[in-house]
Length: 506
Ligand code: C2O
Ligand code: CU
Ligand code: CU
Image 1 (cartoon, rainbow, N blue to C red):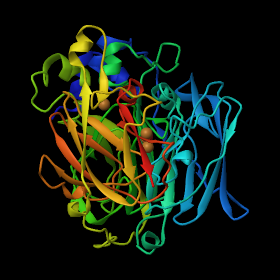
Image 2: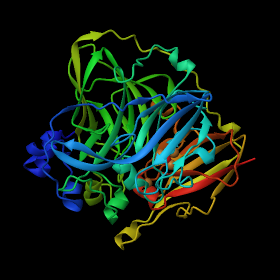
Image 3: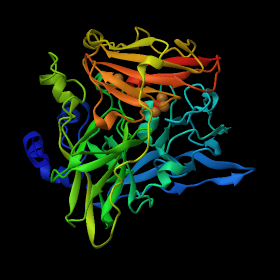
C-alpha cells in the first residue's frame, strides 16, 4: 500500500505544498483535465450541517427549503461560487420520525430549473423529486408524504436530467435522518454533531479563479467527474474534536463518481452497524469499508485509547476500471485514480471524554430475504460503449436503451416481490440505484453477500462481469403514469442516459 506522502512525491515532485492545501495527488486530473491551483488551506473544524426539524403545521411536519446561489470558502481567501439549500453549500439535515407525515416546500431561487429527490425514501412517485418533478426558477414545489422507513440516514439531491451532475457538484444535496422507536430504544451514540456525526464525502476540482472545475469532456464522462480536493460536509482538511469514547459516523459517498475505501490510519477495527436504509441485525466488525457513489454506512469507532486517529481513504481494489480486465492496469487504471490514499477526517480525542455504552450485540430484526416469494426475475444489463469512446462518442445504456423521459421501460405490479438481476457488461464498476424501495442483496455471482451488505440497500455496486441478484417488494403507491427511476449513480453516466423508468401499477 502506497502512502499519501509517497504518492505525492512520486507523482507530483513538489507535493508538500499541495498536501498542505488538501490537494490529493491526482495524476489523472493533472494530466488530463486541469492545472492544479496552488491555493492554501489550513486545517479546519469539521462543519456539521444544521439540523432542521421543520414545523408542525396542521399536523404535518413541514420544511421550508430554498435552493439558492452562494459563495463558499474551501481555501484561505478564495471564493467559490456554489449552490446550497437554505445556505451557501449543501443543505440542512432534515430530521423526521418514522410514521409521521411530512411536507416539503421547495422554492427554487437558483436561476435554473432543478428538482429535489429524496434518495432512499419510500413514497409516491409524484413526491419523489425525480426528473419529472421539475421546479422552475422562482417556483415552489410542495410534495407531501408519510415517512415509511426504518431509521437510517437518507439524502436529498438535484435530479435534473441531464444536469444532475453539475447541480449536485455545485452543492445541491443534503441529508435526511429518520428515527424510529426500535432504534431509539438502543443505546447507540445519538447526539447529533457530538457523538453522532454525518460525513458527506465529495471530491472536487477547482479552476485558477477558485470556481469549481466541472467538465463533460469524454474522459470525464467515461470515468465520471473526479476532483483532487476532498470536501467533508463542505470542509477542506477537516478535524473533529471528540468529547466521547465512541463516535457513530454516518458516512455518505456524496461524490459524483469516486469510490472510497475507508479505514483508519492505525488499522484499528470498527463496528459497522448500518447500511443505506437501516441498521444491520448485529454489528459487523471490520477495518475497511468501500462505498460507491450514493452508498451509505454507519460505523462506530472506539476512541477510548485517547490516541488521535485519522479516517483515511485507501485504494479501492475494484473501484472502477478493474477486475482483472485487459484494461485493468495501465492508462485506464491510472485514470480511475481510486488507487490513492488520502486523509478524510482527523479525529482528535479530548483529554476528558464522556464514557460511551458498549455497542449492543443485537440491533434490529430483519426478515430473511426469501427468493421463493418472488414472482419472477427481471434482468438489467449495464452497458458502456468503450469502442464509442475511442471514436469520440460514448454510449451509456441499460438493456441497450438510453434514458427516454417519455418511455416507461418496466411495469411492476403493486403487492408483488421480484428478483432483479443486474449484470455489468462494461469494464468499470457502476453503483446501481433503485428509487421507491429498499431492497436486499441475494447474491453476487451466486455468492451470498458479506455481513456488511446484508441490510437494507437502495444502491449496490456492480463490478465488471458481475451479476448481482436483488430482492425488491413493491408494496404501495400504484401510479401507472408516473414512473420511478433506476440508474447508475455515477452522475455523469446517469446524465448521459444510463437510467431507466419503472411504474408501479394496480
Ligand atoms: Cu440519488 Cu435517482 O438518485
Ligand atoms: Cu434515488
Ligand atoms: Cu455507471
